[in-house]
Every structure is written in C-alpha cells, then in structure tokens.
Image (cartoon, rainbow, N blue to C red; front, side, top):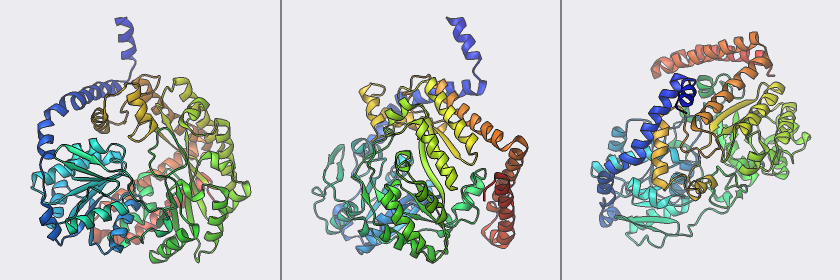
Length: 560
C-alpha cells in the first residue's frame, strides 16, 4: 500500500503537490487554529457598543455606502440603494474600495456619518470584516449596517463575525431608509421588518421586510456618484484582460440595464431569496434610452435572466429596441430551457436589432448532473440550442463547473465531450470553467451540513478564505472524486478547450490570433501604466492601434 501511494504521488506534477500540501496546512490553520487565536480579538469587537444613539440622532453627516471598486460591471445594487435614499431627501456619499484600507478608514471617519453600509457577495465578507474591525480600532462612533448575499443567508454568523450593529435581509432599499429615519429620530428600530440587530453577543432577527414589489417604482440611478471612466468603457477592460474573445469590442461604451429581481428557477448552486418580479419593458428601456444619450453609449448589457424570461417579453424587447434613436449592440442572458421556447425567427430578430452576445449556463454535459442541478434540459438539447444560436449570428458565452454534488470522472468526461462538439461546430463560443462552490443560501450549502461535510458557517468561512489565496477555490469537495482529481479535471477541460479551438481554426490561424491578442494585451498594459496626463495625450494613437489589431483578429476569427 505504501509503495502504491508513493507511486501515485510521484505521478502528480510537483507544483500541484506543493499546492495541495500548502493548502492542507492553510485550511487546518484557518479552520482549526486561527479562529481560536483570534477569538479574543473578535470578542473585543463584538461585545463593544461603538456609538451613542442620542449623539447619532443629532449628527448631520451623510449615510456612507462602501462599494467594491468598479471593474467591468456597473454596481446596480449600490446605485439603487443610493438612489432610493436620495429620492427620500437623505444625504448619501458613495465610497469605493479602490485604495488602501487605512486610507478608506480615514475617509469614512472624516465624513462623520450617521450610518455606514457595507455589503455584496460572499467573497467580500472577509475584506469587509477587516475594514469594520479597522474602524473599531480607530474608535468609530457611528453604527454600521451590512447586507447582500454575504449576509442574508447567514445573518447571525455574519453579524458576530463582522461586529456590525445592524443587518438587512433581502432587498435593502426600503429597510435601509427605515433604519436611517429611525436613527435620525432616535426612535425604536426593533419593529423594522427585515432588520437584524446586535446588542453585544445577542443577535435579533426581524422577519417580514418590505421590498419594492413594482419595479417600475425603482429610483433613478444617481450616475453622478460613479466615475464614468470606470464603468462605461467595458470594451477596454476585455481588450486588456480577455482579448482572445470576440464578443466584446474595444470601443464598446456599455450601459447596464436591470430587467427584474428574483428567479423562478432553483439551481442547486444558486442563492435564492425574494419572489421573481419582472420589470416593465417600456419602463426599463426608457431608462436605458436616457443613459445611452447621456453617455453617448453604443451598447446595453441586460445583466439578469428575466429580461427574456419568455417569448412574449422577447417580442416586447425587440419592438422597443427598434424604436431607439441610435443603433446599438446588446448582451442578454437566458437558460437553455427558455431558449427552447424561442423560435428561430425570434433569434434572428434579436440579432438583427443588435443582440451580439448571449450568456447561458451549460454547467455539465452529464444528463444526471444537469437534472441534479435543476437545469430542466439535456446535453443533446444544449448542443441543439448552441447550433441555433450560431445560425442566428449571436455570439454565445457559457459556463461549466467541475465538482458538483456526487459528480464522477465519467460525468466530467461528458462535459468535455459536449464542449468539444460545441467548439468544433462554433469556435467563437466562449467557455468558462469553474469549481463548484456551495455558497450560503444555496441547496448545496444545506447539503454540506445535512451530510455532515462541515459543522457550521464558521468552518465554511475559514475554509473559503484559505482557498482564496490559492489558484483554485475548492472550499469543500462534494463530488465522488478526490480533491486532486477535481482540480486536474477542471484544468484538463481548460486545456482541451484551447486545443479544440486551435483545431477548429487551424494551427497557423490560431497562432496568428494568439499573437494579436498578446499585442492587444501588451498595448493596454503600457497605456494603463501611464499617468492620466500622458494617457490623454496618447489616447488617439492608442485607440487607433487597438482598433486595427481588433479588426485583424476578428477577420481571422471569421466574425462579420
């Protein structure tokens, strides 16, 4: 047995062996040792009351909301939170985590806020915890509220971990406003539905929070709070970091559009909260048209699946896009079971009105895994759907995951086979491969504890932040494969995808495309490294260079 193990281990690449050893030590440290070392420090934060309600009610400072830095998507959640408060006459300052934590903490304190809010997806929980603890060390004298997916499914744990004073479960516009008004009046917050409060170590959760049921009543987006150069020029981001894809273009000036909230489907890896609500197409497009004109934009990014949730909404969208006073491109997202219900004529009309990109979740090529996830589709229907998309001229982007619950090597092999067939038919398809992560709020997260794979929220948290440091984020293995096999199979899918693209294009053409992508990436790096003044001087020459390279690349790819 020892000889067998030794033989097996020596076949593992050295870099993988080093990583697996390091990761094991790191996980043990964070999940078993670090929590106990830090427990005194955490108790010091969570047991202390950092503000006086009487003082806060007399304070004239703003509500400060702290968002992640803008990368390539506009932070609509913060936009609507800030917009709602502003429409109610509340002074709002929006800060971004685009500087050091030390500078951010000083900036927050200098504003003398009545309330500071943090929140977003689970990956930000660690950083937000660090910032709050940093504020505590500096003697903060104002309350903190947290929310978002990092909080709503695990409110008690998140409150105790961060040391926040309040939390908002679910959608936050109305609840946050109710909290601010209560703080201004020094009135009782205990009756606010959907609000979570913490007094020392006691966390109280109020159910029944209000939310905006009619999405036509969403507030106007306060674009003035967001640096336009960071969110409008999405095409430039893709040119620098993902030039190998033909979907996004250098001169894309993109406005994000919100089409609905909630989801009627129940994928096992996804977080679910409020009921699905569909935004009126005309209301949505009125907002989009104003933003297109204001920012001289040329593309819309419909950032949720509910825009084309059924054929009727697709027809409405097409009719409304045709009425726009300027030609645009746009990106939509949907599911394969919805795609099945859309006729070829509708797909053609989508493309004719400017639909350039469609995002879909493949997730697996195994029918067993697809059923387990809740996709209501088969691998054959996925391939059929991708063929129809190719015929329409729309460019697809898809995702696939490795490490699903009970997944085997045979299941992953079926995903690889599906990918090969799809790329052979259409090398323009963009695949992204991930490792399954059972985030809080998902069915998979519940399975973790039902199957006793983990003990509690704290263990998941420390495993997660340990995994973030490494090149893969495998928090806990729920598959029927070993940890090493999950990582290996995911990497083999990536390599196989590149190989299939090379075969589809031909080696010579593929290499030419790769060389152009390297030139694009290098030109972007040189340009972005310049000072703001020098970038302005070289803007015209840089744009001309990138557009020339892009046109050459698209021609080689066969993109019309």
